[in-house]
Length: 258
Image (cartoon, rainbow, N blue to C red):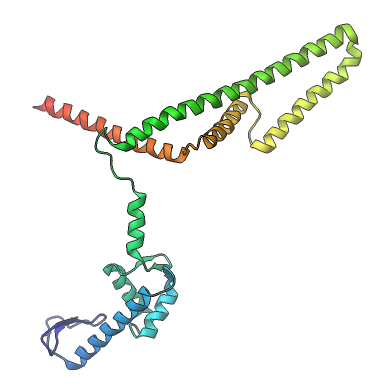
């Protein structure tokens, strides 16, 4: 409720509703209560500003409201906290109140990338330079993975030729049959171990991908290449170029309409 104080000021008392159509008159008692409420709110704001932590739980905040005299009940304390939240003194989120809203806003602004406006943006040049380096890293990782697969093919080929030689020249099938059986069993054991480690069924494509990603990470680390920065710039550049393409299409449509 708003009313005119004895000194000619308009004072708002939270939680007090005036009857509809009732005249607003100066009341020294209500004026004093409003001034006291203002003083207690000022004290509460000072305590929140000097609080050792950047946040406080809502039950603690309600207790602080009652201790400072800003509220008498939890319901009034909730109204006070809602008013402080609306005024930007704090940010109420779930069961906590964050007491440094300006710091949170600054961190959010720092986290949000500035929009790209043209192709001369330095981030586009940085992305293009990183893209060239990324291609070199990918090439080295791809060559490494292929070498591993060729080594595996060579090992299997040598094993097949060796068993063939033993079967038909050195020994006999009666001797080699259990050997080949256990060799096949060893391959199954290796495949099962691969599944336990990678949580994927053994396959040549999966082996290539695993060797490729492992080598890519090692090469990127050795060259101090920031992969997260690269993908973040990639998303920004793609978003900028999609916006450019939409703008060009809209301009073409406008020209056709004219």
